[in-house]
Length: 158
Image (tube, rainbow, N blue to C red):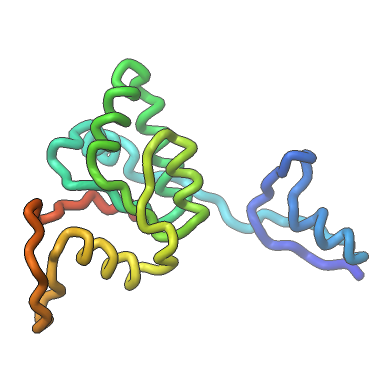
């Protein structure tokens, strides 16, 4: 049976899109049609913010594209890339899922929160880690010795 596969082409270790390979194993003849294109719109602004980790309490990566953008920004200035990564690793780097965590680790940053899986659970995780109550919440939490207001650079690039 012939099928249309509407996605961005990716190559695995064998040099073939994994969907085409897997579908082929089940007798499907898949034709891949890339229907979307992607462009980063705010890299200069993002790069400027990323170059000043002292102004933020951490990072939140919500997608693989956000990691890709961070990698591009860090690669732009190879002189400071290593020290910037060290400075960001001194802060908490949160991710929303395992795929994003893997990519964050590949660019040299340490990820937390990979098992959360969605924004709501990640927000809960971050607030618990930083002892921050949700506005309107009547929960009282014990204050840690190291209580701070977490300023986060959210990496949602649209």
